[in-house]
Image 1 (cartoon, one colour):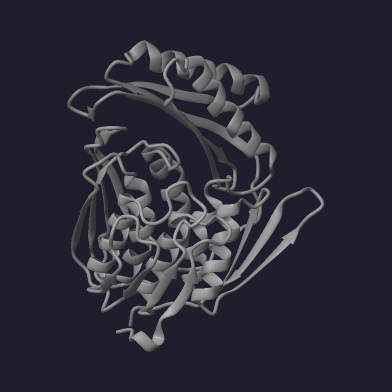
Image 2: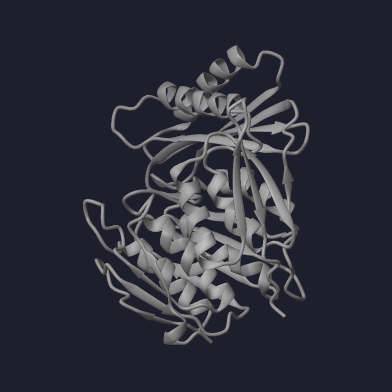
Length: 362
């Protein structure tokens, strides 16, 4: 168990300066048994300090490691987390709002490889602004993460949107013993073999809205990827499968080497047309394909923590690095002995070389 003398001080205002710093450092603290003190939390935001969702994530992690969380209040600008022992089990976190369940997944999921069979039940918004949509986590994040040798189930029991929330996702593992993550080699993207996607609508946005999103996305994609099979499903969520009203679209490109690139669009503003959302998602996917990486702009930072914890050296070809990725690198280097280097190639892609620490629960 960490002691107060072992606290690592983290500046919560650097680089991205938001909730991502808390997610990465709290997860690593629990896994490695290192106490942390995070200061200047979200100092540059309009509403500095912890928001309810950030607090939910910290409380979830503290529960999973029998840790002590100090400063755990909404608007707190400084917290400390003294982890105990990470334990297997069934863990539930309910935001009681439309707080993102997939961001809660980001903070807690890195713990699961190092535990026996466990389950996370996360309630709130499944498709929320400034967070991965559930379908992205399911069809892009999950299969790419499994390349580290970590297998888990992920499903959505009910969709929930702003402002009501009420959605629920479940992530679970079925393993007799903890595992050690293996390094990955994501250097060769290969050819784009197919495009998949889901356009969904719920509540006041009927099935024709989802159909129009899918149709426009396919039209834009076909202009850029003329010989690639494109299959975008249009899905209307019933009252049994979703709470409230919402609409969105998630697209992904499958490559010949097993890479998956994703992009999405989520309806938020009133008056946004189905065609506008379909076009937005399609153009975002095309942009990520043209960037030349083996991962898209939103997956870059999500894989860093797993590569850092893995045994061996991972190589990941990215497009231009995002601020979230730069932040993940700095936080990971501060919390661990991992070595991370960046090399920009002439084609504009960036090679991340990550020498992992080979963490083992034993």
